[in-house]
Length: 505
Ligand code: MN
Image (cartoon, helix red, strand yellow):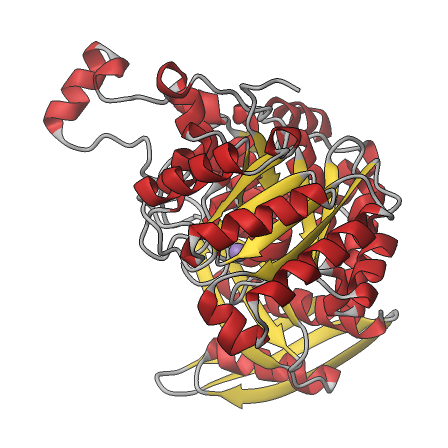
């Protein structure tokens, strides 16, 4: 193994997916898994198979679809959980089982209610058992950064001698400082016998804004795996963002002397896909992928950039795949031009997929004279390649709105039949959503609704996202249109279709 290569372990589909408002549909998880593999991620943590049947099926499907990346499933130290995880990942080209137990005094005392001795016995027993199933076993010591180093070293020795091949040292609560992380990793790598045969991994949370700094402090001290997520999504304040970790290692290769297997030109596209799936846009000033990350506003800065970009730009936007040249498609652009443009933008769609997305492009181009790159990105990002079964489709609507009231009538197609209803509401969106609920007889709870303009100008496309929940599952529906009302209704129907698909599986 290359000693200077940092393994990128992506947990967007596990830690990211379990964060508030980020749950994903199976088809969306598969799209993201494929995008992560194309990005060059080494390990994809696909989920927590023992958590639910849906989660198990998702991990199994991801394991089947990945052609190169290692696919990991997370589980507790319980035989039935490990067995279930093995069933989910066993058909992967390269399966990994990731087991964990907490080691910090507060977790041992308050959560697990076990002694340190018992904790070591569990680590030994379940690592050995997992090794009977797979050769690639990662052991995580939850809350490692708040575990006394003496005990953490014993725990790591136990896991390594029982056969763990990766030792993960999470800063679960985002509490540690870079110096503390560096010291922890150095002590583990100096004092744990046999650690040279295992990879030390970092998993840092961003509660104090130090997730990236801590991950990098870990690799400076000898760790060779970083666990991260696209756009930094994850529990609470999130995980170390993949794009920041990777671009820090690349941009400051002079300092770190380390590489990754990431094709950085795919970062921007992958980030767009994830934000479209979860319906959450990164803040504009977000490092590397935020909308303003490469915008120079002050006169002095603009002057410098015009003379020499290197005055204020340490990363070239094209290195993370942000397109530089203008692209314009109009209603006269045919399928060939459309296909050429999207492949030039880096999307690989089959002819069948192009056939299914082309009518949507045409109907947008009819209404908006020229489509910019951002419009096409919104169109493709909102389009799930594995098409969800469309139980309902929006056929027509009529909405009238007044100052404090509105009424809407909608027509939907369901199994070739037309259904519809009329409802009134506080405003046009409320009335429209109520009419759809009433027509379908489905009353899911709306947990979030957002609408964004894709580009500037009054003919900008509106991109709507609707989150619905049935109490157990949540789905995010998407819709784009030149009309925000229409985009919103399409997103609402899309969310219903996705939620129904959960219920049927
Ligand atoms: Mn975590």
